[in-house]
Length: 179
Image (cartoon, rainbow, N blue to C red; front, side, top):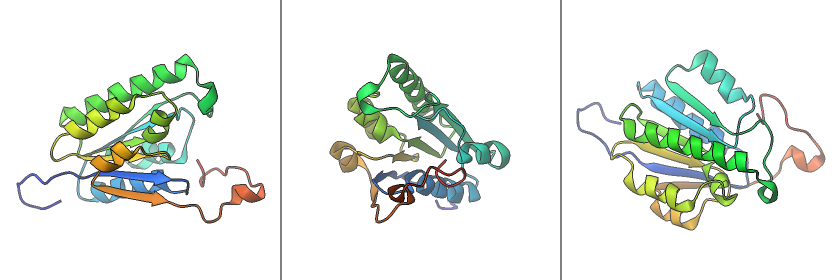
C-alpha cells in the first residue's frame, strides 16, 4: 500500500487448513490495513452467535464493518437446513455489494470455504467474485476445505496445520480464545 496516488493491485488471500488461526490471521491483516487508514468489510458465514471479534469490532474498530450471516448454532454438513442456505445467500449478496461498492479496501469472507464445502454457496459464485474483484481490493477467504480452483486463483495461500489442540484432551471452547 504505497503513499502515491497510483492504485495498487489488491491481493486475494486464503487462510485454510485444520489448524486454529484462520480468522485471527485475516483479522490481523485487517488491523494492519486499518493502521494505514483502510476500510474493511467482513462477512462471517455460518456465524450468527456472539463472538469476541464481533464484540471488539463493535466496541473499538469503527473501520471494520462486520456482517454475520448464520444461525446461532453450529452447522453439521450432513444436516443443513434451508434457512442455512438462505442466510448464506444473503451474506454472499451483502459481501458482493461491499466488494463492488468501492467503499472498502479489503473484504474478508470468513468461513466461505466451509460454506462452499457444505453446499450453502456454489463454488462458481465464489470463483466469479475472485475473478472479477476490483483491481485494488484485497479479498480474503478463510475456512477449512479451500477448493483447488480457489487456491489457483489466489495470490497468497496459507494452510494452518494443527499440531496440538486442547480439544483433543477434552477442553471445551473458551470465551475469548475460541469465540
